[in-house]
Length: 345
Image 1 (cartoon, rainbow, N blue to C red):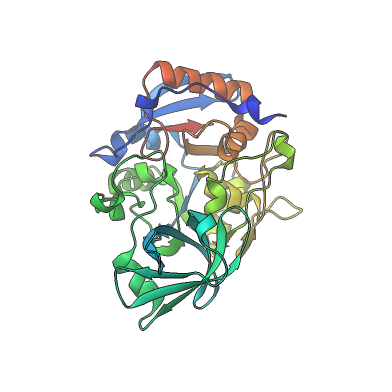
Image 2 (cartoon, rainbow, N blue to C red):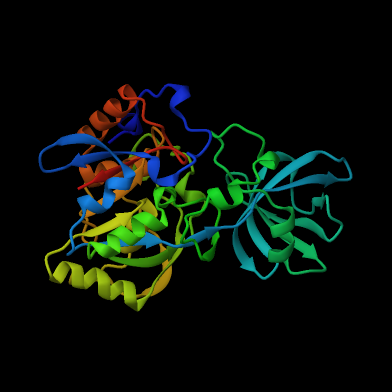
């Protein structure tokens, strides 16, 4: 398939720039794969659409304020850094902008004298190995200096968006390590989770630290040639039990988000069981993939020509998904990270 097969028209005004005041007030498009149909609802109604035999799986990763603003020494030119992955205690793979100005040996200064940095090595696609130098733990310093790494289609001042530190987190975020939120989880409230429990739906948590691969553009025409960068995940034994027991009793495993989906599908053994453990999810899901762990999916609306739209199309079928997206556009749904969502059954 070609990347052009995963395109659609989206008016710019439908790209959500701010979150709703109430998380569970989001709209939710229910897509039924069996009947090839859809219907409109509100996210607050999610508990009524699940069964007591189901298991709902959440990604509890927590976004850290990874976007750093610095200046190149001695020129003073502005530099933006997004640490992606820790290689050594003080060396990170870091997305840089503008990358052409940063070569091996380049020095970077920050607003706080307690942090400096040096480029150790130049990698591909604007990524550099950067050594951060500080008289305090780097994690402590970045909490003070860093901004929430909002997606580029949210066009407002990063520095003025201090509320995003909590709003661009799920309410159950606990495991620090993501550079982007698992946005399907942003709709959940304590009220929704409590009602799920009241109805007998089992809820379990896994961790996948969302990395650059989740929003890296697809730069090839043939989608079979695209590879999504690996992301670290952990599945505890409690989640393994809930998932496998749900299948054993005839229930559905409902993944909240493409990140949860990727972690679960990466951990299935030859017998079709999800296995506890941790490691790197190195799985690219495109149409033709056979899902073995996930039976239903809560997901936001994704960018055209993206790996996430390909994953959702693999789950529900490209034609059905693109038809549902066109309906969402006509009905004025809000798109992307702070937008509305879908429940695909």
